[in-house]
Length: 110
Length: 118
Image (cartoon, rainbow over all chains, first blue to last red; front, side):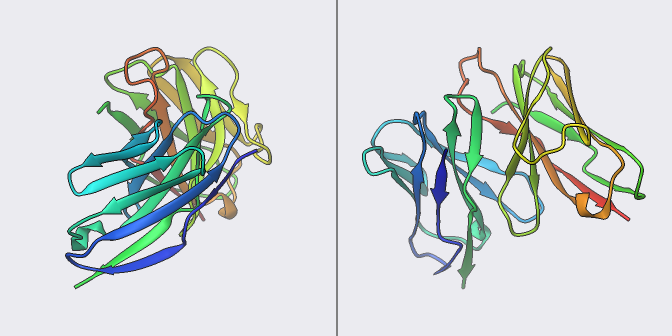
């Protein structure tokens, strides 16, 4: 089976940096995704990590450690529009199914 | 990224009726499509996986006779909620992947369908 854990809620200040952690247990790891989801909307793709290390993409970066079953999403220069849920997801059963964690609701305050 | 179109975006139906939700991949061939359900403030729960031309694979606890999935072509999958009940009210989202293409790892999502059963 698989298990994905991430914090339920986080708060941060506009302009600051926030790190959202995700730990996972899965058989046959084939990559980890981060998605952003605003209320009432579909998820949008942020990043995909399959090798260890840090992937940087503008204000967002994602890190993966396969040996530790651990990933984090780093958001820099936070903006109010970054208030959303951030979903960590991994493949299960090879590349067949994408399974999501419960999501982390981030609230950015002025 | 690739585009997945889901229709309708919102639907209200009476208890006991059926509702069909369509999911189309507009610029790629979706060999595999996934249907998720999301209740308020919860994450996406996978309902079923459908491969073009074959029967869908349902997750444990999902009634296949209630949630009918058809994936008749490489660009279209449909989810029909039969004999809808108020507890079926939820946000349904489809996701499509092209397992044969260059972007074979990423899953592209439709806009979602907000179903309300009254």
